[in-house]
Image (cartoon, rainbow, N blue to C red; front, side):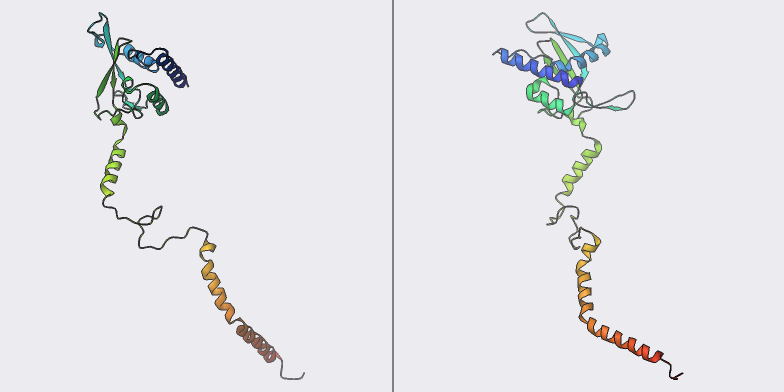
Length: 226
């Protein structure tokens, strides 16, 4: 919820700045990244924070190395994977408002980065005199199983025969189409045929049955009169 409220304030602030002045302002760090950059700067040793002089201004540009908030990261100490700090929905909203060069590479941004493990992407924000090295790329988001599945699908699509049947019974070309329904529905036609064949000779069987009953009664009577 805190990320969503921060994102709404960020979007409204950027829209007001863009609508206020006709001239394009200098690139500034989106407020949604403030906490991420501050945490990275605090945890980063002071010796690694570099300052580079600009061409015309006497001020220095501070370089901070921060993890890319659009993708997940693996903790080298614990070996566990942490999810992205900014959700995909927030990433999509940021991509709609900010230009692509304001944001690091991610699943919802238009820029595609390489799949290197330690790839970094440096973005300079002139308004804040800050250069952020976003560590990690969006190419690592696809897991090994997903990459293997995609490669197998691409190689087997050309070898798969074209069949007219589609759905859960795809590939059963030589088998009859299975019936979906209850058992009494599947056996309805056979049961009707069997009933019809039995009813055709029913009168003769009834006559034979009556005659057999009369014969049994006649033979059961005693022959003597007493």
